[in-house]
Each structure stands twice: as structure tokens, then as C-alpha cells.
Image (cartoon, rainbow, N blue to C red; front, side):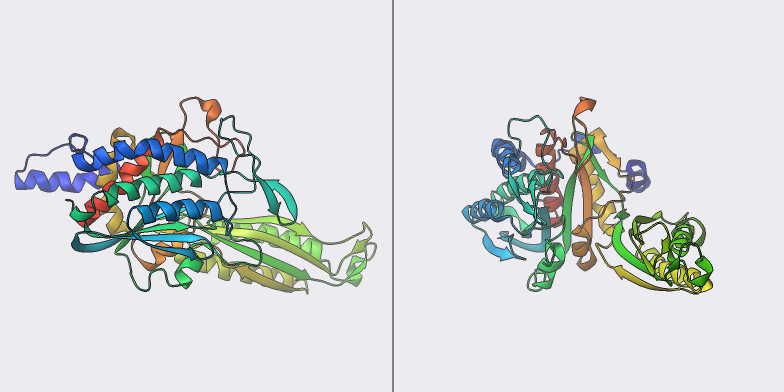
Length: 433
């Protein structure tokens, strides 16, 4: 990524006879901005640890939202609360006209009981789906909130010099709303988030278990879409000793499972983008000697391209229907759309990658494709977006665990890098100071 993104500017500079200056020699931020970052960092660490110790599940982020709203109001912003239940939006209007930049952080924790050995570990418990569960920021959203609050402090301190407007989006329920509720980015947009003030670009970050302080980004599809499917195979019940007297949905379901795997491996161009079809559960039958009437299977579909996503949906339905028909059965296929592909606008990513490289230096890398999903994708479907990853992996391998692990650990050396990155992206997109 680094070579590809910088090669064209280097060639142009050579053709024009300009002196090429290494990005490593250019300060990531103006001196004023860097001073503000340095001043706010103790508070960023304090916020992060406080959020970590007091996590809240999606659509229930009341305490977190209150702290964030109070901070944005103290900075003199226009603040809207209770957006999509508990979301908070702050508007900072700069002293000079210019573009609108949106910065987003998610707020919710997960129903995970923390096992990480930190002095500010969560001991919070609550009810989730009728069960008593622990709650933990096992995906790092505590870092996201603290980093964006820090960037808000820095940019508010430069308000008069800003050439444009900044929208600070603190979003609930990225991990999904409680059963029976709407939430997250989709609901914020449905309630009109971008209706009165539409950003020219939206930026977001996610902490990731890569080396602390590393920044990773890629253009195009970055995180997968995630859709759920349910297939019900309708056969005809009969005695297990006389399968010919009925239609066996278990055998048909087994054939469908295998047939579905030919979609990514044989029906789609695997050189264009990866895709995954996973059957996660199959249920049917009660006794060893009874062939049941029906079998139900559920699973997920993931890919990195909108057209491939459409094709997978079409082919899942066709494959299941025709395999069932060949045995005299029928199927009911339901596909529930989840998060779209998180797509980094290529032009925006090429424009802003040098900014991230200035911030991260040698720790700027091309991101790998991530088969997990992110609802930042909804914002990037509305306006040009760029989503990048911030490394929080500790030097000690024993402390490096994947997101959603009860041992998830974030190295706080990443925090100032995140604040500088969001600040620099905003200033550079606006055209600098």
C-alpha cells in the first residue's frame, strides 16, 4: 500500500523537478495541534479507563452518553442527545468556511465476562437475553470513545482556524441492537443524521490486535458484509425403516450444505474477492427411527463486494431450491440483510493515506481483508468514507488476544496515535491551517 500510494506523487515530483521530501520529515500535525494533543492525553487515558470499567450494552449506553455529551457541551459545541436511543452528536463550526468532516466512534460493550488482568477491569453484570452476564469492552470501543473525545478537545481548541465543520458521531449499538429493537448507524441515519448537515467525508477507526501504534488501511472493500440465512427443507415424515415411503429432509439438507460450498469455490470468480458461506446450525428430527417432516439450517454469508453479495443471495436460493426439487422436496429460503460491505472510497483513501503515513511513520501498512463486519458501512454508503485500523497489540505476545476475547487487552500507547490520526485527517481534508 505504501509503495503504491506514494509512487505516483514521487514520479510527478521528479518530472516537475521538485525536491522530494520524505513524509517522515513532515510533522504529523501543526505545532499548535500537537501541543493540544499532548495536553489532552492524560484525560484521554482517564476517560478510556473509566469507560472500560463501566461498559454498557447496545442501546443502553446511558452513562457513557452522559459523559460524552457533557464534554462536548463544555467545548461549546451544538450537541444532540438521544439519537438512535443513546447516541450523541456534536457539531463544531470552524471560524472559516469549508467542508464538513464527520468522525465516528462506537460506544457499546459486549456480554463478555472480563478476564484481563488490569486494575480497571470491568465487574459489571446485567441481563442479556434473559441471562445474567458480565459486560466488557471486549472490542475496544472504550478506546474509540476516548480517542474521539480527545480529538474533539484538540479541534475545539483550534476552532477559529478551522476551515469547515466537524461532526462528532458517538454511536450506540454497533455490535447489534437488543432483540426486537432497532439501533446503530442504520437507525441514526434513519432518524436523519445526515439530512440537515451532510458530510463531505466520514472517517472512523477500530482498534485491532496488531502492533501498538500501527495504522492499517486499504481502499475498496475492507470489512465483509454479513447476512444471515435460514433454509427450511420440507420433506415427508416416514418410518426410518422405510425411507422410500417418505421424503428424507436430512439427506437433502446434507446435500444442500455441500452444494452451498460450491458457490464460493466454483460459481464465483475467486480472483475478484473472497466470500464465505457458513452453515452454523442444523436441526431436525427427534428419534433414531423416524425420518422427520423438515430440517432447518441457519448460517451466514460474507463477502467484500456489493455485486458478489447480490450473486451469493441469488445462488443460495437457487442451489437449495433445485437440490430439494431433485428429491421431491421443497424449501423455504429467508436471507436477512446484515451490515453491508465496509467500503473505503478509493479516491478518498488515496488522498488521505499520506496523512496516516505521516502519523504512523514506519508503522503505516496496508490492511488485510477482515471477514468481520462493521456498521460504519452504512455511513460510507451515504458519503465517501474511510475506515482504518489502529494497533493496540502489546509487545508481550501473551497479552495479544483477538477482539471479543475475555482477555482482550489494549496497549494504551495507541491512544495518542489515534487522537493524532483523527485530528490530522480532519485538518488535511479541510486543506490544513
